[in-house]
Length: 263
Image (cartoon, rainbow, N blue to C red; front, side, top):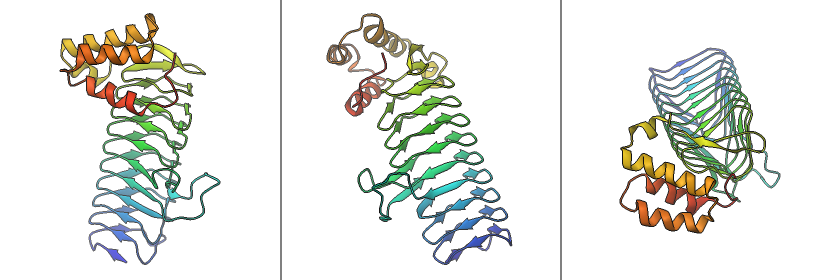
């Protein structure tokens, strides 16, 4: 066990031998931190939280009360293999959140990037890959193997089906049920979710120049107003946007999409 002398651990909490607690970490009362957990500098863990398994947490994260981090996943094939959960830096994770470890049938790891904000009672299933600067609202969940790309937003009380890919800058409206992939910068809502327009309020969209914004609108037109086949949209992307940085977001999305896109 390695515990920094600058960390603050409530007397009622249990930190097992084999855990690593970094500098200036704060662990509230009645928490359990098991062997194999690594918690980086400056992270705060709220009261009554449990962090278990082979879980690695970066620096300056905040976990709300009653969080369950790194626990056994809900895949019936899981047989206690040594899979992992990896969380980056500066994430805010709300009360009653559940983040599960991966499976050997998937990536063997659940991965969360940096600067994300998950509100209360959010669930991140096994083998999910969450990028950077995402937002997930209260009582929403990502089923197993979901990919949530950078700057995507999920509203409250949403359900994202397993293996779905949500592109960069996509926005899922409150109470939506998503069963297919959502392209970058597309707003989707309803159950089952359907396209509702371009997310022009995304901070990423607003930071782009006019040529890149026009390409996003053009691709939306081709996908939804003209209802072109995906291969035709890919061809248009190669011809029109090969020299624009935003085109890489679409290329990555189409290379990962397996479930078909919302229509």
